[in-house]
Length: 382
Image 1: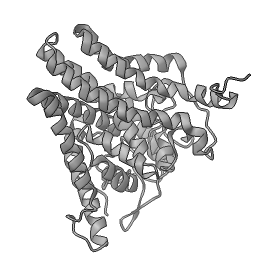
Image 2: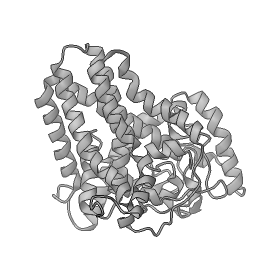
Image 3: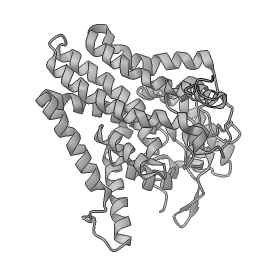
């Protein structure tokens, strides 16, 4: 007799193809190992995210193969499942760690902060990235799961900013997230923190105004954002008191920093051509930096195929296509190395500025004056 619990060969093949993308789940036992052991074990989460996957990129090289973009959702079950189960796993780990860290006496105050730095690396590298995948889906409950992940890092407005502002205005002065040429990360970061919230709220307010409704209308998603974020703060305080609330804020701050580092490198120096009268060319793969590094794309569920994401935003992550240097500019390394380089502006400019100039010469040889495109405070006409 055949064992009825055995997966069909075709399903086993689908599972085996999806399994590398499940490596992100390994961060959860790592943060728990760090929490229970303390000391040098606390560096495990950031070291594994930044350095281990950088080393794996060197070992495994590039993946330039593309899946059939017409693959059905039914055939993507094992890929989708990892993003869905991450939500309860992150929620449980985050708040259980708050209770544990504030109840135990084997961790010093500094070790507790270091622990939640590592938790923030996890909720930023994986959690926010998965929320990005979920917020783009047509299924309402998947979008809700994305909202829960963002509420856990107090960055719920990212959904509105990303969908209503970034995707529409990428590569123009109206997009706060497009890093300007020669704009170092340490200038970019505070600017984005200020501008993204305002642009997200303004976009939702304008959408309601077009329907004849005030921003206070209950359909404004900011009410949901504030309610979810408030609930997360209350839960952290109930489980760990003021210390628990402070540790929650530490991980949220680290996660937001991780997100904006990625935002910084994804479009640095890339701009859409201004056509006059406030109009710009359509978004193309050339307007995002592409990276085909295999291991870091496993960790980040193909986020580095960012050129295709902006070209076809509704594609699920396994179906994102890799674009060659003919169609899209290429990063020299995966995101883990590039985000570390971004923290050192002279090093970043040395790596990236020649590539931006090469990109300009390749795609826009007719543009001789790039000064209007260079600085956020000197925008092109709208």
